[in-house]
Structure formats: C-alpha cells, structure tokens
Image 1 (cartoon, rainbow over the protein chains, first blue to last red):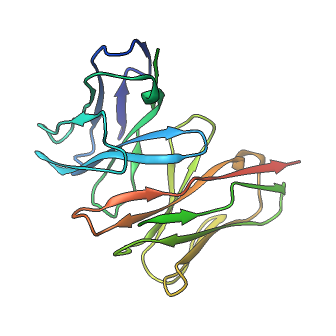
Image 2: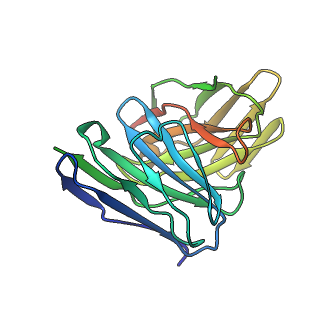
Image 3: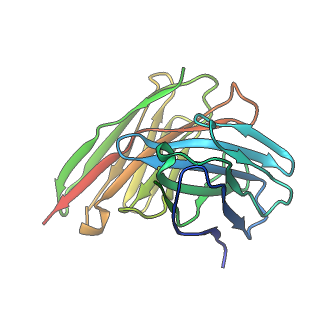
Length: 112
Length: 112
C-alpha cells in the first residue's frame, strides 16, 4: 500500500530534550516536506526536500533541522525543543513539485 | 510576500451546493491546489488547477482564474461526511523548487 508513515504519532517531552520524528514514504517520491499545523494558522511549511541531499527552508524553519540521506526518509529533528513547538506535525511527499501531496497521519507533539 | 485568503467558516445543508473561495498573492504562481482535512486527520488532495477554467471530479469541482488571482472549490450534493476543513494552496517559485503556501482553511459544516 502506498503510504507515508510517521513515528511517533504522539509525543510528550520536556524543554531541551532532543527528539527526532521519522518520516518514510514507499512511493519513490522525490519531493518531501514537513509542516506544522496550529489552530487558526493553517499548515505552515517547515522544510522541504527536492531530492536526496537537497533541502531548503520553508516558512517556519527556526528550531528545526532535517536531513535527506535516502530518498524514502526525511526525519525532522528538534535539537532543543521549546513549548512554542507544541503542535501537530505532518510529513508529506509528492512525485513532482507540482504533484499531489500525500500526507502522513501526523505527529502530535507536546513540549512542557 | 505570499498570502492566501479564504473564508474561515461556511455552513450549508445536506444536498445543497457550496462554494469556497480562495484569493492569492504569490510570486511565480504555478497552480492552485485544494485539500480536505477531517478533524485532526491527514489532509487529502482534492484537485489541482494549473490553467484557467473548471476541473471536475465527481461531486467536487475547482475553478481558477489566473488574471484575477482567484479560485474556488465547488461541492455539490453535500453530504454529512463533507463536514471538514478545506485548504487552498499555491506554490511559490521564487525559491527553487517552490515553497508550498497554504491558506488558513475553511471549516465547512453540513447540517441535516
């Protein structure tokens, strides 16, 4: 089944404790993105990647890192999480830049 | 800068037709997409318009007018399951590969 998977689905952590949210797709898509969703603010792009080893900042990249060492994986790293990073996070992939995006199920992160 | 405007809420009755508008301001416009999101779930792709005119997919249609920087999503024969948030999105091509910018979403409530 074609899908985007994210782990963990739910995470409660404390300020400053490094964490990684994994994202993997099995559709051989070149384009992958991370978004955060907050009430009243919609979906905001954090980072995107056009292919292996090619990443670029989205609208809200501060406090986040990403890497794209393999085509299928695009982890999101929070080196020192803060409470303002409490949010619902989505990973997405698409075959092309203009293609339909397939979203993962989401990761609900709470930073206390 | 880039911005998209869509109504925050729309209410309609089952069986009716509803139109959700989206106006945008971007650099290097390259198509308007629509996504549906049920409460807390993953957004799912509905349609994409690269050229002016109407695209129809079953009960859903999407329209684009590039000269007016305007598009809309038309939902016909509304069903209770259509109650969800609907997001328009455009890609900004000033940045290579393009950031994807989402509107803040329109919450559609379908009443019996």
